[in-house]
Image (tube, rainbow, N blue to C red; front, side):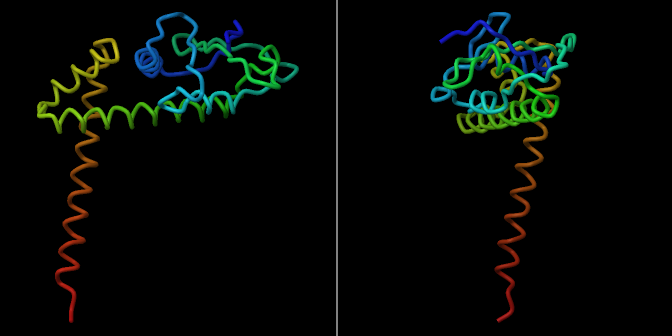
Length: 171
């Protein structure tokens, strides 16, 4: 059910584009799907953080980091009064959105590599195309791919050390 009431948050433009691409939302005001249909489980987190604004509240303008989200209808909460995120809540939600992006991207990388796409440039291009992201984020995605490789290699190395330490146990 649409309420028509918006909540402004501060969010990195890259994450804004990721959310719009993942949820296929091209309107100016972003709308999460219903909580039970949300694959990234961000709608529930957003709804849990909504609060009533303080008496002296004045809306902030975050420039290009301004992201408007439609407040959903929640039983026993009037969206006209429950449409505010504090600065701390905004930071926590932004962090959860980043973690959801990172987990989704790393899963995407694993899936493509298991299907034979070993060239990182191809995987980054496929992700940009799938999420309908701007090409200016190519370097950012490449760097995140490199982080994934480092994490993967470190895990392999740690597993190798554990296997060797078990093999050399004194009797």
